[in-house]
Image (cartoon, rainbow, N blue to C red; front, side, top):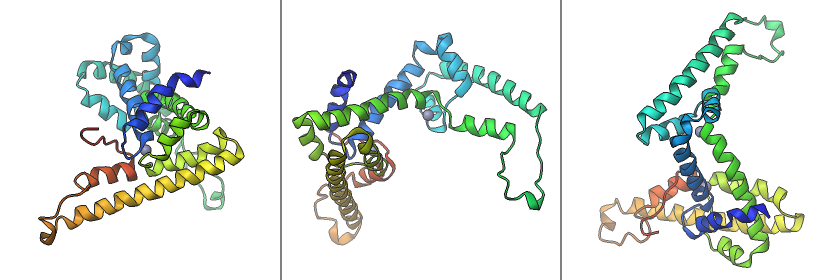
Amino acid sequence: MKEQLYTIPVNEAFDEKTECPICSMYHSIEEGALDFTLGPSYMEDDVRMVTDKVGFCERHVAKLYERGNRLGLALMLKTHADRMLNEVEKKQKNLKVVKKSSFLKKVPDNGNEVSNYLDELQTSCFVCSRIDNVFDRYIDTMFWLYEKDADFREKFKNSKGFCNAHYSLLLKKCTEALGAEEAKSFAGICSDIYLENMKRVRDDLSWFIDKFDYRYTDEPWKDSKDALQRSMMKDNSIYYKPEGN
Ligand SMILES: [Zn+2]
Ligand SMILES: [Zn+2]
């Protein structure tokens, strides 16, 4: 079964003990996709055909920039700009910007070709599409393991819960991946883990705030030293791996 190929990285993500193992999975796939994008592959025609066409989203162009291969990124952005300018110039020739008369207000506004093209370009991304492909298969593998592997199921139950986005994703995906009864039980377990751990981090954050009060200066930090980073991971899926983990 092809999903079994991904059991190792999925298990590793759950072994990491971060505030969201699904974020850990996403992070490792994302790192791989960024390495690939700025590796030797960007000189290959088939890769460049795609990067020229779809470009990069805001998040990933910033991450590519941080990696320091300025020439590689410049080459990709240059041929992407060539293609984009070409498309925009073609569409500008047919550009119609019409103000609708008031009695046509109920007719949906289909915009204009230039805006539609540029709006789509804002969201299309070579790195995102490479990630999405693998991420979906990791999620399928996770459900497969949950169903078939008793050890993994224990690991899942003992995890530190999930971020908001991934708790929501698991609730949606379980109905596709599992049978009706199994999905119901999964959603219940998943919800308990989510809530219990979200409250734990909220309470850590509360103690973190108390520690700024002079009355608590000499009290121990307990688990609150990195409560802010862990809260940002729970709320906004910003990957954070605690030290020594
Ligand atoms: Zn997450
Ligand atoms: Zn992206």
